[in-house]
Length: 367
Image (cartoon, rainbow, N blue to C red; front, side, top):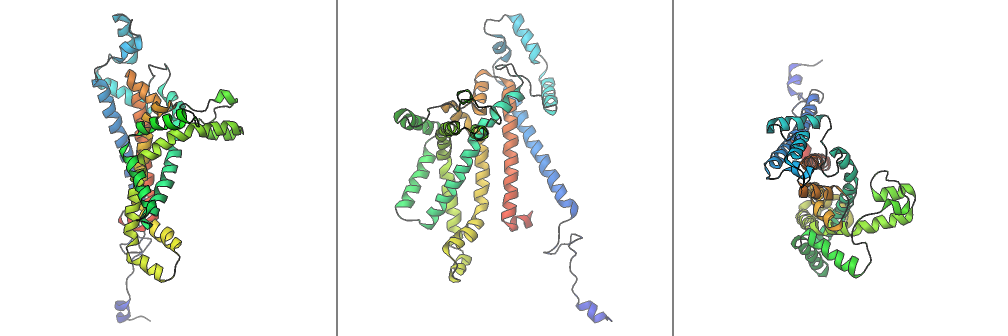
């Protein structure tokens, strides 16, 4: 039988089901739904802002896409008819509303160059670019983090100086210059790798299933095509990786060096734990949050920065398609590419944020 004194001594614990405020409390059921809805809303806002800004800038550029579409020898009547067909004779506000309505219907308009729907062109040219970006991003992350950890563990000596030189070269040389040097030295000079282009499906009788040359070669079971696909990828991937490698090296070195000086590392070593376990399990995991954030941002840069690399290596992807659209002031492909790159960039950043929350519970508690 309980008395008043017992009731006064019994602590009151916050209910996990009710979403109490204590350290063990579970967040309210509607809390994560509101956060999810807010994040999705911000994704749409960012994409809308980027597309709207690109739309306005494209309309104020002193160029006449109707003239380019009709041809240089077309008369005023023909140009006016093309302008009417493209909807460029309408007020700017009406053009903007029509374009937003087309996006909701997945209609991005037609390209002046290809005379085909922009969405169809993007779906065709996007896989080669994604193949290039995925392989470059994976290579970049593995090499950058690994060498950054080695640089932090061995700050002196020949290896650290060599890594420092690599990071300086990558930061100093622009990506197009790295690509040209690779073409001159490796492709033209030594003849080891193709200078430009990608796998020709017709040469090997392959079907274009996914648009990823390596994956299509594997699906077709053609090892010769696989070797050719990899050979065409090496130089553009190397140019992308080298141009950004210095960022990953220096950031990983800085964060890992800071973690190595903390007391828990000395405690783990004093307990007799192996150096590999201390570095990989403890130090590296605590150092990954800023590194993963940087990798997410770099993935977005790689997706947009492939334009230069694809032009240098004549890589038939979204970057080369965008370059031709910029060169001819083809508005609809420019807007469609902006939509795709912006949406991808925002989604990748959101996934990066979720990975950081999973790795670092402190971030999850602050959310």
